[in-house]
Amino acid sequence: MSETFIPFHVPDVGEEEIASVVETLRSGGLTTGPKVKKFEDDFGRFVGSSYAIAVNSGTAALHLALDAIGIEEGDEVIVPTMTFTATAEVVLYFKAKPVLVDCQPDTLNIDPGQIDSAITPKTKAIMPVDFGGQPCDYDAILEIARRRGLKVIEDAAHALPASYKGDKVGAISDITCFSFYATKTITTGEGGMATTENPEWADRMRMMSLHGISKDAWKRYTAEGSWYYEVHSPGYKYNLTDVAAALGLVQLAKCERFYEDRKRIAATYNTAFAEITEIERPSVQPEREHAWHLYILKLNPGRLRIGRNEFIEALKQRNIGTSVHFIPLHLHPYYRDTFGYQKCDFANASAAFERIVSLPIFPGLGDERIERVIEAVRDVAREYRQ
Ligand SMILES: Cc1ncc(COP(=O)(O)O)c(C=O)c1O
Image (cartoon, rainbow, N blue to C red; front, side, top):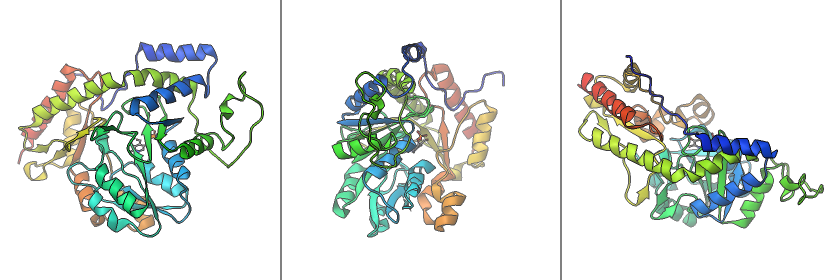
């Protein structure tokens, strides 16, 4: 036990990010300004989307997206149960109802085959989540949306950079929402981005991200700006700061390199775990580029004498940090008690939850620590084999 603990995640923030933030602080640019504008431009170009709106969290991006498409009290929105609470919570901001849908047992993405039966005359949108970084089945989801007259708001908090049949995530759905939270594939500490091809939705999201006041209000204290502004709607305070964007710009420039690193770690894990029958490796569907934000193992319960919690504890004893993504929404007290969900409602998500463990995967993990993770998994599987 002399080896140091390997945390589940360590953000990769280097001297370039520090210099960029310091330079921004020295320039006096603290809140929204030219760095945010450049971050939006670079990000839009990176994912191939015409409009990119930077905000201070992925949750804010999801909230603004639902506002832009006109979600109202009493509406229903399809949300996978296998997600973080942010995806569903923003629906509740409108006094609308998140209608949960089960996941596919292999990818853990929303099961398109179960969406149609969850749609009612009140349904306005589908919010697929690219779980762990793997894009959902967008041919099927977009076909359902078109046929039923629904909008698709993609929660791509895990999916930068990822692609589906050659199209980058960020340029597939009606609006796509990214997160730059500290553990995400690029970070601004806290932050998010919404991308769309629709200029009206882009204008609305931009306006609502800053109190609902008229366009370019952020310039009002600069030489280009004017003191005059108009309030068009009671908006929110969701604008990103230049300090955060200064960090984001450098992270975005490193995004491909980070991605290569995560892909390599996933490939190394996949090869090493191929012969360990006590565990199942992540399932990746064809024609998809997986962002590998998460590397999720599934335990094979019939082959192990211990459950998921003990497996995590055994890895911890071997100095390996892990996590669980996610506790499905229908198992949380709020969603269970408010909507009357039961464990048996979503068989795939409930069963998967008992089996999933997320391993460390981040740029800079390094060969020595990758090997230690692999050795620890192998050791626990061997020790607790049935
Ligand atoms: C699937 C998913 N959606 C949305 C969010 C919210 O992102 P943020 O923390 O930037 O608000 C997260 C954050 O962990 C997430 O995992």
